[in-house]
Length: 164
Image (cartoon, rainbow, N blue to C red; front, side, top):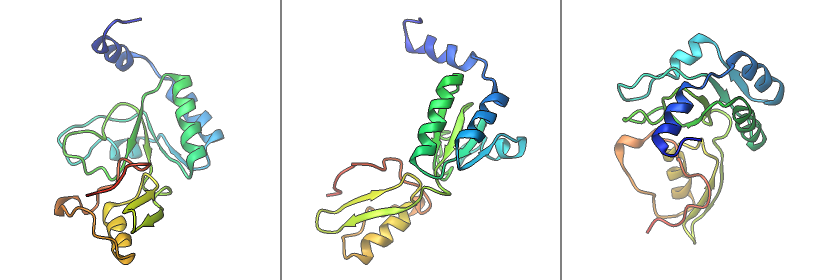
């Protein structure tokens, strides 16, 4: 076992992944979409930055069980995982040689907004502006307003506290 993080990172990047078998197992165990075709992989190879990393494949999970199944299978095959939002990052955070979990299609529900405690429970694919609008409808003070992030998805969906 390598002693430092750099060695672990190099070993992980060079580890071969049987993408065809992984895709087959994912299709059997995930109700959401499993896309390992070249066109989808090319679309997910970029974000708002200059980085280009073609993923192993893309999974659009329908629910928590799909996420758990996808992560378990990726681990079984030694494939890295990358959770992706809207692809708006400017520093390459959502591009990598990994199985990309795109939460934006099926897991984008606002579960609860509590205007008194100023807390929200959301799924990981929620767009920040949608949450902001829901909070304003419930007479909660608006969440932070950065104009460049209108389509950003929230990256911390569970148990992140108040905005004071």
